[in-house]
Image 1 (cartoon, rainbow, N blue to C red):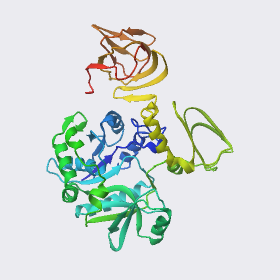
Image 2 (cartoon, helix red, strand yellow; image 1 turned 90 degrees about the vertical axis):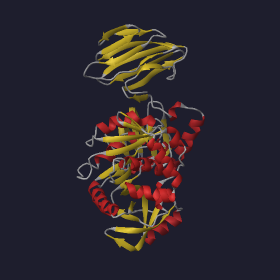
Image 3 (spheres, rainbow, N blue to C red; image 1 turned 135 degrees about the horizontal axis):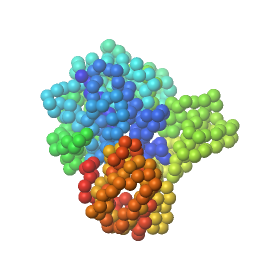
Length: 469
């Protein structure tokens, strides 16, 4: 059996303003109509060795991850929640402890959730080779055959004399090189891009981790032993996990063992680490442009232009990145997109909300989108999924008006409960307990007008919540 372990942490700040802290790139549809997490799961379908997966994510993403996973063909999954980011070595350890908890010792296939793989057939073939090596006690990594001297990736050097069954023994892992060194790696022919994908038996990884990074092993084990199961989620011990050292699997294990092998793969791989990389994997037209959404371009070449909600027009530009969202517009040269991370850090230091959230915010019951705001008022468009409900709650500083646009709602307001249908409305006074439920079979859509002295999302006192918040 192979159990995929899909790492769905990280914020992807280099793809701001589309990727935000609370809605990162792996949960976005960047290259097609499905999200990158869903694409990662979908490319595993058809393998007879896989019937479920483990997804590891930040606690803040849990409901979005759960909903997206349910829309894929692999429906039996476990979602492990990290209470804090501690890099890949501890995250994989949590998955390994979970895999062996019932006495099994499956092969784990570790995959980042935010990569593009164009040649799925070749990837699945390499996966079978990796399974054979893992069952033989090897720690397997997949090295991407490089097509250029890339300075943004780490490299894996293979021992040319150590080839067996489409694998090479690993000679060394090397850091991101400068341009001259990268060119020398390409000329050498024994270097591959480090893809961040791995394969091994759960016990093989844990044995190596215990030997070479015992502090990570012990803290991860303690955190898993303190775990609680909550519906779709495995919540590991917060205090125990926060004591865990932060380290990557490369540093903690792979660079230190003598049983690591690399499988070279040529699979149309990209880590989509920048807008330039996203341009390259997109549907490039005859002018060298990737145009998404309502875009009109004239005399525009070699550019990536994305319009999410309104018409965007470009004229007489070359080598540009233009990304338009509800609350932010990015205009950058493709040669300078790596600097976006610095801009995001600056915005974060200024406590700009555009770093954290889109105007459309997802919740376990649906989503809401800000339409307008000003002193002492705010207007939102709210969508509640069929069968879903907001928590029973009250606000100390605001009152709310609800107008149903479509669907059927059951409203709790104080001691009263009543039904609202299309074109009907109600008023929730400040300090009154209230709840909104979608009792219909279509999404419930309404407009909410908030008025009061303070309109922050932290002015919520919850009394009952079916989602355990």
